[in-house]
Amino acid sequence: MARERKFTLEELYQATKDTLVHVGYNGFTFSIIAEKLELSRGTIYKYFVNKDELITEYMLYDMNRFLEDLKLIHQYKSFDEQFDYLLGIIFRDRTIQQLIRIASQIPESKENQVKVNLEKLRRLHLDMYAQLEDFIQLGKVEGKIRENLHSGLILGFIFQSIVIPNHFQVPESDWFSSIKDIIRFGIYRQS
Amino acid sequence: MARERKFTLEELYQATKDTLVHVGYNGFTFSIIAEKLELSRGTIYKYFVNKDELITEYMLYDMNRFLEDLKLIHQYKSFDEQFDYLLGIIFRDRTIQQLIRIASQIPESKENQVKVNLEKLRRLHLDMYAQLEDFIQLGKVEGKIRENLHSGLILGFIFQSIVIPNHFQVPESDWFSSIKDIIRFGIYRQS
DNA sequence: TATCAAAGTGACAACTTTGTCACTATATGA
DNA sequence: TCATATAGTGACAAAGTTGTCACTTTGATA
Image (cartoon, chains in turn orange, red, purple, yellow):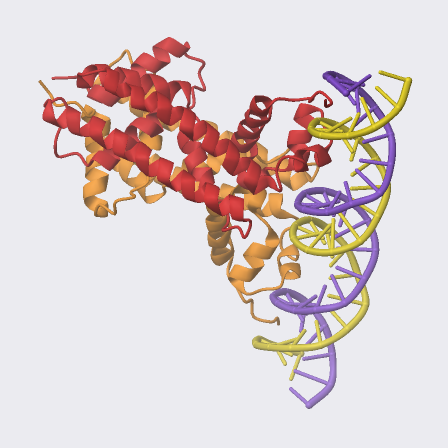
């Protein structure tokens, strides 16, 4: 009983993600999205009251997806296996921490849905951090990682390393395994 | 023979840097700068034809300053000393690679001065890379760092590590020495 | 094949940002 | 104290962005 839609929610979210990563929160406009999806700008307003609502809805979607993957880390019992698994999912989803940083730029909105979404995002972020904290603790209990390193620093290292730009077009799998290697053992030759 | 200026170039550049880091290229406006310096917007146009010229002039200034510091690395002969020195200046100037990323967002301008500045910036960036490449080679020749690691990855690792956000307010000097430690030896306990 | 619910459009007003310029202010020294 | 060079201002037009809405399109189904 209705006309066919010209785009799917997934396409819209993909365009939102690409645009956010490319031009940042302040460069994000509905015009850019409309052009990418070959729509008129007005159409997007049928689904989202403004850019903050679109951006936060997309972020919730993507963050939930990432958290589902993250929670599967418990399938692995040893720290080494968990390390491999975690690095794999972060590498696949390289934008996650960039999005977290962008989320913190969204101004306090009077739009109620945006407020609610930002609150939910904050909770997801805490949940994510709790999962990761468990992972670090396991590493310390197993004696795999040094106890004197602050876990916030270790996690920061992991997330930042993953997004090092591969300017020299090193093949993806070599690049990825070198990153894991550096995180584990650093750049110095073992004496 | 003239009226006193309400601001110095250093103050203007400082405001430019803070604003760029805070809101990104697309969020940058003369209004924000004018407000910070308690000026009218029109005043800034007396000195810079538009935001791209201000931003690129500021970046040249800051990049040149950083490169001068970087070149002093040759005062040190051993890789270990160079490593400490380099990490120190990058840590002091945490914004450098963020600025490099922002520079790549400035659109091709028809304004001639902006074109020239962007070209100069590209050359400075290459010069910087050449210096850093020497540093990595020294480390490999001395047998300090592993030869199988791509130097682009090592440098990326160093620059990204420095900007890990210190959410937990770990004292600056502890934070800094832990970062150096992880870069050298990774997060795993040495067996 | 007529109906109608959902999808899409583009023109409009309100608002913001950008760049210009005639004008005002002030420190210096003739 | 007055001439003048440089600094600063705020009002304006042009351009871009945001949000709204009456209208058109389309496809399923009665």
